[in-house]
Image (cartoon, rainbow, N blue to C red; front, top):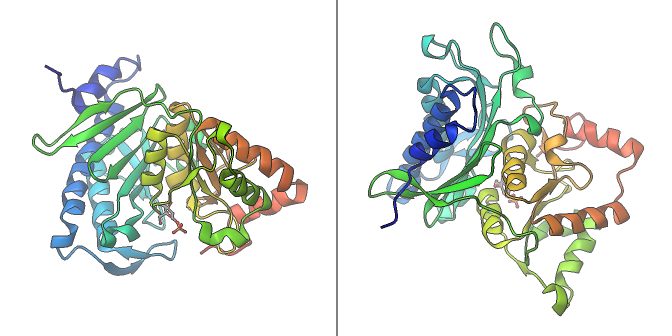
Length: 356
Ligand code: P6P
């Protein structure tokens, strides 16, 4: 009989991978798992509750917040506050990061960056959505944690994960020693190990991109799309185009089957649409740990300097050989030279260029 291993059991078992760990990271991951189960309960019955639709508020991105965005944000912040292991929560839904105060958190040493409900515009049409989280260790050693503790490079993450609320609900995470996937068993209310040691195939035949932005793509991306569409039996082309419009769902599918997700620069997002802190860094950590690759076309995502909480980046992420092909074409057809790099940095900062 197959022995079920719950997320909690797995976390404790793997705690020994961190000789100096005193259980704080384990408890933090547990807290995130609990909040994910609560959010899952509401996402799964969203059609039956007055929790669909717009909340009538906007987030800092200028995006209208869905009622479930606000609900999910509250649940994760509450779980992290009561768990006591986190000193700062930076949420994609909040303009500024939140200091976690109180006696229970006074020695907390972890920073959590979270996109509580990514792809929420898909909620009303019953398409998979997700939660994305990153965990960092604070750098400052005394007093209140500061923005310096939040604006850390992706390489500094101690853990990252996502929850996908799809045909089943899964939690997938890494602590830098591989990637493991857990499927929620509603009958016992536990995430159970279902995808141990996940690896993304080095090659794939699926490309995910919003081709509606084609005319504004860099030439290197246009060349890659044409490469995907050319008949070539040996390399199994033309590839298949699949785009859900929910980053977690698109990347999770590519993780399982192989594939590449591309969000290049566009006219409305000259630095890319996706957030470096809340989406690109955690998903890149996970994909690299699964043997894949993640770049902005010129630089490894995890190496990018983080200069702003809501900084954007373009991203090409997935099967290693597919991402390398994009890099090759970007280098040949859309080289980012000298001044461009400076301009791109200013765009990243939101100093120039339109941020939607
Ligand atoms: P577009 C959802 O809003 C999101 O942040 C990601 O989950 C998704 O991959 C992307 O934006 C979709 O953007 O411009 O194609 O609708």
